[in-house]
Image (cartoon, rainbow, N blue to C red):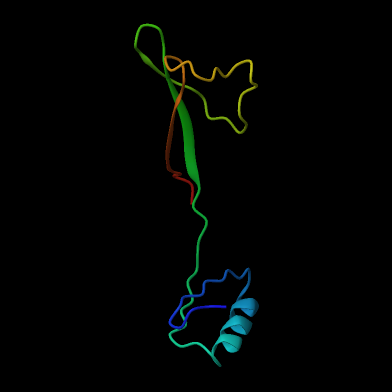
Length: 89
C-alpha cells in the first residue's frame, strides 16, 4: 500500500510490459513517466604499490584472485581499484 502522493517505481524488461504497466496505472496514478536505462561498460584495473613506493598497474581480471594471492589487512600491498567508462561502443 502506498501513501497518498507516494512514488512507485517499477522495472520492465520489454516495451510490452511498459505499455501494460502504464495502462494499468492510468486508472489510479497521475504523472506517469517512463525512462530507458542503458548498459554502460566500465574498464576496471587494480593498482598496487611495490615496496619502493612505486605504483604498478595490474592486468584487468575477470575473477577475484585466489585467497592465497590476496592478502586481507596488508595495506601496503592492498590494491586500489580504479574504474572508468570503456571506449568500446
